[in-house]
Amino acid sequence: MKKVRMGIIGAGWWATSAHIPAVKSHPDAELVAVQSREKAKAERIARDFGAKHACTTVEELLALKNLDAVVVASTPNVHHAQAKAALERGLHVLIEKPMTFTVDEARELVESAARRKLHLLISCPWHFTAHGIEARRLIQSGALGHIQMISVLMTNPIDKLLRGINTSPTHGMDRVYVEPRKGSYNDPAIAGGGQIYCQVSHAAAYLAFLTGLRPAEVYARFDRDGSPNDIYDALTITLENGALVSLASTGATPLCERNYEVRVFGGQAILQLELWRGTMTLVDFNDKRTEYPPLAENAIYPSQAPARNFVDAILGKAPNGSPGELGLAAMELIEAACESAQTNRSEKIREVKGVAGKKIGARKGAAVREHA
Image 1 (cartoon, rainbow, N blue to C red):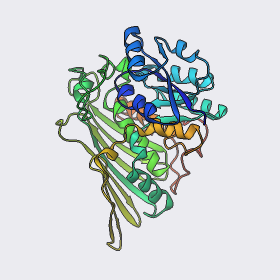
Image 2: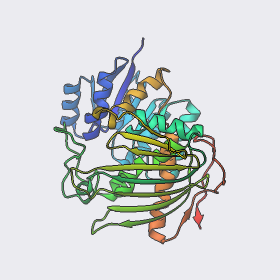
Image 3: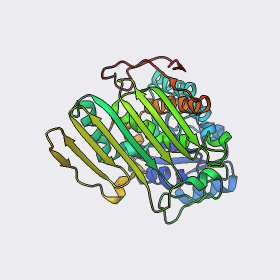
């Protein structure tokens, strides 16, 4: 069987920690090329991970013959241009979160991939846990009844990255191959913003993943706590089916403490997920409690799952588990939240249907936002 020939754009901290090891360990993938702006770094990564080509520019990598797909793991400010160029070259694209800087950029990528019948996958490992997949099935099958309300608390101790105090990764890794570049997380011109772009991008995509619904309206408040970037974020969201969502997120927590609590309140049952702890409980209105088996530690945050699924999807062995439309839904929420935080007004994205909304992928065309 032909292997999927892969190139890695932006071979830095996360690419060498997650994507490249995933490609190297996949029996049906071949790591062909890596790209980094620094020649010595690109050559070292290519040598250490067994890639044939060490490139210093995206153009050089995309000009290689026989590539099938690329991973865009660069900084957010160049995601759109690099993914667009790859799609136009006829390559499948796995893109890191946040997908882009704007809704228009995200929509352009989704539409470009669809026209060319290429896979566009947003790198969100939470979409690949056994609990996440089962929660999505329960919610979208109607097992909880009409979804009325969702509560989300998401924390991850990355505030020092967002403040530019240091660049030490905080994903519980004992050792990393390369450190993040200075500015990758704390320069708004590079990262887009703080917690809203870096971490709420996960939670926003997860809302769309679980429910199949898009945001309709958002009111947001940010606290920068003396930083150029938002450190504390609080969002009140209305989904297109009328469901109310409260989403709170911060990176300012002790290193030993992470929270990712999702509570989904339906008309027939309540679903409780503790993502960082790997637990899930369903409680119906007849007081029946179903405790799902806790996830193994290495299955709580499957960092290599997006790249592995990407290869399988290209080969037709599995569906795309995290399609670009989820990244687009996240960008709709992020862009509206940033505007709301500036104007101190609710931002309307689309009309509320008042009934269970269509699943992700059913809506076409631009979302029109106006002050509510």
